[in-house]
Length: 166
Image (tube, rainbow, N blue to C red; front, side, top):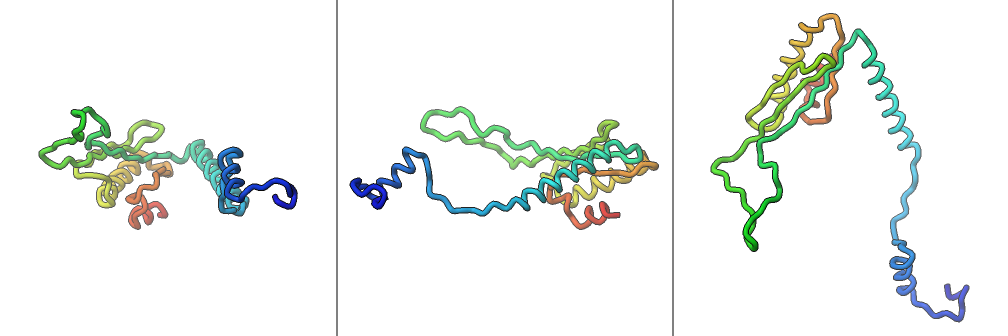
């Protein structure tokens, strides 16, 4: 700056302040752009969607979506209280989560179950999945079963993964 404008005296800190406040620039770490990672992720997603859509059209297969929802604890995070005093929920006993697990296909709800002891554990999901699998094999003996699950840790147990591979 001093070489290009020899008559102007400006400190480095003033220059940095102007960059931040006037020009809205900040000093950041330089990152390298890796287009191959983005391309691989995008390609994997495209292939998954293509396979998913093909499975939907396949009359020899039935797709079953499994999902859970938990409720039972106080749903509100805000409420009214006297000014200057905190808002406190007072319960006499501990509330457990109630978990509803549902399996849905193009024909409607296949299996609905409530767990009253808390969230979805591997043991509860194993029982649910065994019952669902048994009922679906009886209901759709001629069709291949395709299960769609989210990434809940109970869905990734070794038992469930072994059944899915078979």
